Amino acid sequence: MWVGTIGSARGYREEIAEHRGLLLPVIAASVAGSLIGACLLLVTPQSVFERLIPWLLLFATIVFAASPLLTRRAPQTPRHAPWQIAIQFVVAIYGGYFGAGMSILTLAVLAFSGLPSFNAQNAVKNVLAVSINGVALVPFVIARIVDWRFAVPMAALALLGGYFGARFFRRLPHWMSRAIVIGTGCTMTIVVFMHFHG
Image (tube, rainbow, N blue to C red; front, top):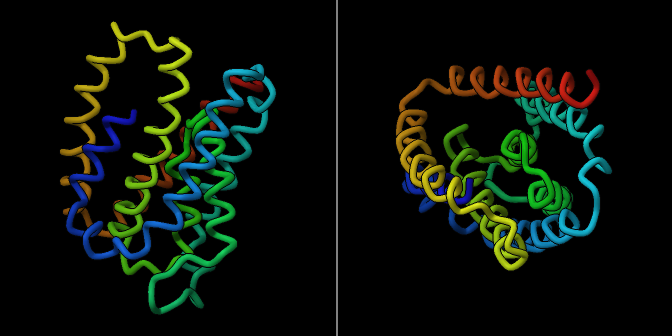
């Protein structure tokens, strides 16, 4: 996943360069939260949060879908409010701990930052995903729980998919990209809900 998000971030290099001034505070919150989440995973049973996951995904999908209505008073100059940085810290804890649907949670937070397009939101989200997954990987490697037989080929394919997926999405109309994200969020919510509550 980490290598795939590097490819995705590279695919949005133009948007990242344009909005790099926004990255430092949310990267710092993401790194701290991810490290906490990864360490929690090593010392607590995953079942502690399993039943909350589908509800988190459902909430994030609804917020993202409704964000055009909710962000009519978003700042004209892109910026992150303190509450967004705090929520991103919590999202990063979740990302370091479990990670499924983390991108939708992050996009829901970024929808309120006044970023000018979905591509800009996706670019910042990918940089944060690089930070979260990269930091979360370290405790897992130290604990020797990574199965490299599967990790290496999956990482190689994820790198290609992340890069070419990002370049493809940059060319899609804004409404179509949003529709794909909302559809993915709904599908993931149903699948995860059936898995943990079925």
